[in-house]
Image 1 (cartoon, helix red, strand yellow):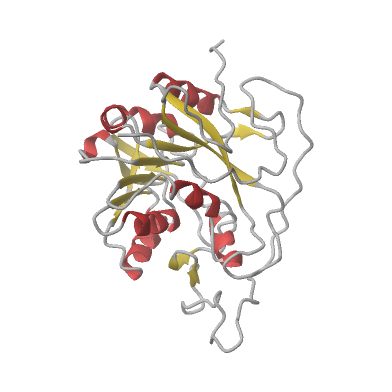
Image 2: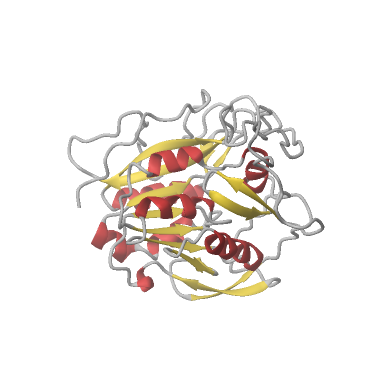
Length: 325
């Protein structure tokens, strides 16, 4: 298929320099985030309850609010996605603005590490009833919320899977998360050395036997390379766009070894890669909340598209991968 159309100009990266594959001088440390409570200020005159009103009974760990992609259940003690939804009614706006330039009505998408399904819901609206989004998360309590969100919003084209995606089929122990405590609930790494937790299945993109694939979105805490290797046949057959979380050490601004391996693997597929920064705070957020709890923090991703001679994506910085040492 032809390469995806170019996205809109790159969102500001906050002056950050893209991570290197080596050891550049360390940048100044980022400001520490200061957490606050729920916004509580998004009620519009004459329009009833505040947008950020919790619609669930008090006492449980979860809340449910109207958001930029529909009604979402989430855990506000999750200090990234849950907190962002709680404060601003949105998360990953830059991601969706970029990816809506890639996907079309009727497309098939795989979302690995889908969390509460907030991105899957947004993408599901873009692909429509003739398309499909396969959303994966192996954490049972998170998977339960994701399925609820798909059901509440009538997202029958979004498939909710409690499995991990990897390089081969098997089983894995998923470490438990304490949903009553603050922390990054989506930051649990799946590792073969884990022995405490709940068992979950590992499957691969290739074993899904998809009829087509337009986008493979991957954010799985260091297992991105495994997901891509388990999708090698699908990538070769369908040439989807790839949107991959990149991990780096903020102290020396160097990509993690696993992210470097991912970049080299994607390059071997004859793909071009670009850095994409997704901001965490927007002044015109869904709730109109002007309290910025994230500062200039961004989430770094790699957008990869099949190579076409002479082509480039305006507004995004191309990734130049140095030879392996």
